[in-house]
Amino acid sequence: MSSSNMKTITVIGSGLIGRSWAMVFVSGGYSVKIYDNQPGQAANAITEIRKQLEELEEAHMLRGELTAKQQLALLSSYDNLAQALEGAFFVQECVFEQLEVKQSVFQDIERLVGKDIILSSSTSCLVPSNVFSKVQNRSRCLVSHPVNPPYYVKLVELIPHPETASTVMDSTHALMTKVGQAPVCLKKEIDGFALNRVQAAIIAESWRLVQDGIISVKDIDLVMSEGLGMRYAFIGPMETMHLNAPEGLEDYMKRYGQGIQRVLTSFGPVPDFFGEGAKGIVNEMCELIPSDQKHLSARKERRDQLLMGLAKLKNDN
Image 1 (cartoon, rainbow, N blue to C red):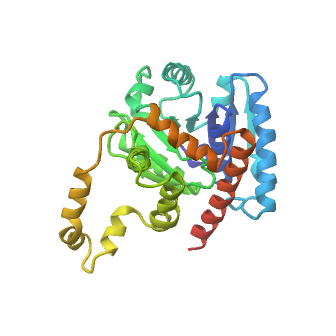
Image 2 (tube, rainbow, N blue to C red; image 1 turned 90 degrees about the horizontal axis):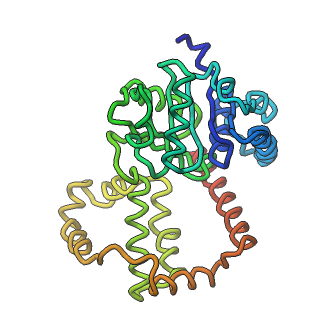
Image 3 (cartoon, helix red, strand yellow; image 1 turned 90 degrees about the vertical axis):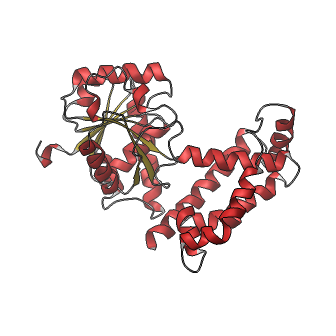
């Protein structure tokens, strides 16, 4: 396949994640064809993207070398799947998070594309061996799991199907790097991938500490935002340990390893997120930020503004 052909990406599904992927891909100069099976939805998505790109340009936060107008010119919308897939070298699926829906979408796609076209799913909780179980040629299939919102949080987890070719992982890694994302490769599939497994460990211990009456909801969030999160915005837990002992990671474990093991063995079982004890935590959270749309939307907007600022800071470093 000549490099001139490797310019078009098809995004399947025009919801929040589909629109985000489309914005990321056009920022890297790729033509993006958005498909949605609901007539008119893909066209509506482009209207929504136009608004966002213009706002980003005004805030000097537009990604890539092209202007908002140039990026918009790379977008097209389709209600017809065959037309949407024509000419694409890479397909990013972003439909509803339901196994049967994704399986049938990939069956439909496979009938319409050549065998070299990479098929990628945005799923956050379904493993590739399930998502692609009805695809004939699974060597070109993988999960590319973004983090919400992908435009500011650049991590993408690449998870292979047991049959995925290493060249497919390499090509996808190169594509994601080219469009400014930060791809990480899992060597094999596992429930929760890497990000959600680490997140689940943090959620579990945070929940336990509040449930056991050790700390408040407000203060456990400060432990992360004003403590661990300050480091983790730039370096991960492995490097943090490596830098926290005079002679690196092995020295760190000599000094603190037994203490960490002692604390870990004191952890309680998986907490109950639904029973009576959970109600108190939910109420405490809702006192801080009520769960009506007005309050939640304002906090989400604040979150995105802060992430935008952090993304800018990370780019400048």
